[in-house]
Image: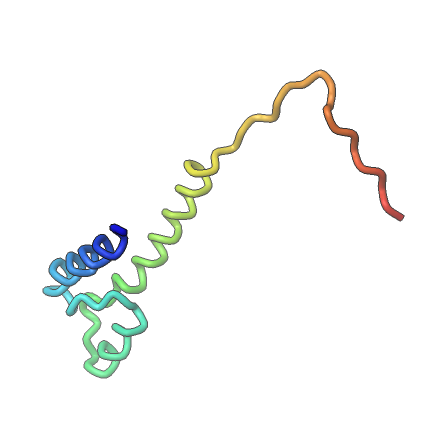
Length: 87
């Protein structure tokens, strides 16, 4: 129930903060056309660097924080027998 309000507030914040830089376009593909036609590349680098840095940071957080590796348990005996090989 709160998700639509949170999304709306985030879009509004992006427009207010990003507006002075490049018109606050939140889609790199949508920003590329006007930049190409008007040949305005001054602040366009953020559309290329941001997704790569964000994706890399999200992957690192997911790999090392969300799903940390657990050490193997030290059991003297196994609880499960291995499956026989299929010919």
